[in-house]
Image (cartoon, rainbow over all chains, first blue to last red; front, side, top):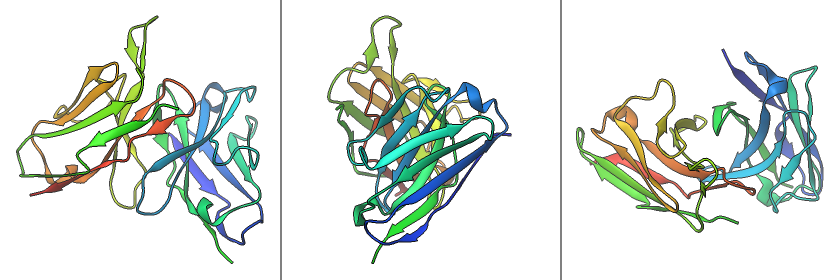
Amino acid sequence: QVQLVESGGGVVQPGKSLRLSCEASGFSFSNYAMHWVRQVPGKGLEWVATISYDGSQKYYADSVKGRSTISRDNSKNTVYVQMNSLRVEDTAVYYCAKEEISYDYWGRGILVTVSS
Amino acid sequence: DIVMTQSPDSLPVSLGERATINCKSSQSVLYSSNNKNYLAWYQQKPGQPPRLLIYWASTRESGVPDRFSGSGSGTNFTLTISSLQTEDVAVYYCHQYFNYPRTFGPGTKVEIK
């Protein structure tokens, strides 16, 4: 069965960096675009970034553009997002999601807290 | 950017009754070359990730009960739960995947009246 497992979250000070990972299993990872979506606790969903199946195309939300980099390693079935210059407003649960047509599978999410 | 709006914000419905959620996009998400609406609906329960219910505006995802249905085209869409069950209490989001940036509606909270 499809599984997406995020890791790398935690508490980080403003201005610092963090790299989130999402390890996938149960499907042909290298055939699918992958996304990061975040959610401030108690609030709505915000798309963060997308990487194409082969890593050749990347898209970012304005809120993270220039501060974040999405990447993938198809040999490890893993997608990453490197987040730099973190802000308090980046505090959220970060989900990775697989795209078939829309987001058909999601991870459980990982909490990132940006606080001094 | 395509702005997604939803109404109502909160929807109290009696068990067994119909629930109707509306979603509007600020521009059409209908792709003329394939006549498909790039609109999805998600259900999210507390402490869980979102679950895909509907894609292409009206296609039910595998395993989703048939009391859930989606309709609409262009800029106006509806998610209908034909007979509300206790397990349907959740927040429902519409989502456009027509272009980037991908955007979501603010959510509609469905609860038992």
